[in-house]
Length: 137
Length: 127
Image (tube, one colour):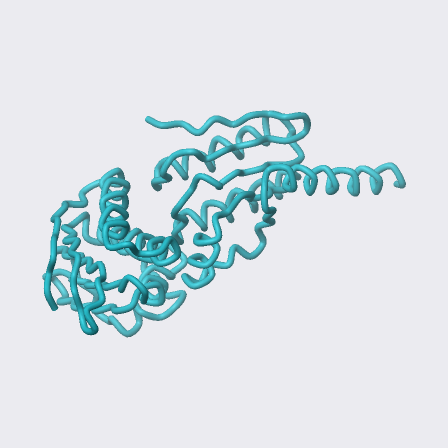
């Protein structure tokens, strides 16, 4: 996969989420992503950045425009934190599961909204989640 | 700190969310609205989200909370003007906003609230 352009941001407080969502929208618009896909991508990213803030006290996001198979452009976002990690990813990916007070839709909901979802977590070290939304995906 | 203004129109309260919602702002709106319902004795709450481009699970939950809390205080809540892309995303996310009434636009939302008020008004007069 070829990376065409990228931007790195830190998410340490709630207002950073607003700035991040706006920046992400710029990237999605740049590759001509349709409004519905833009909305899905930004909503998924909003869920994941909130998780990072709530459970890991913040982290970094990397936004990239990538050129994938069949030369289709997409936006890839990588969320990295040094938080407590997720002991049971399978459980965390289930609808309705939450260790906080939320509805437990964040992770499984975000996965449904994007084209590609990858999660890696080590207890005590942190979590990295990578999502891709293809322009027409 | 941003604040979302709450307008009183007759028996109803109206809120138009014109800014990007973040969690604290949404929580403040929830508290302010419920307080306003109690203070004014409003019978309905109309929330216009036509300028809102993202509703994630947190904001969706707040909207549901507002409807639930207002209901306990005898006020109906109608959410109006949801963008189609937001509706598609919410359902796919797994949050179809059950228990929250919606209408296409402010005008239709107002009609709905007025109808509800008339229905309950008639029931009360029959008793």
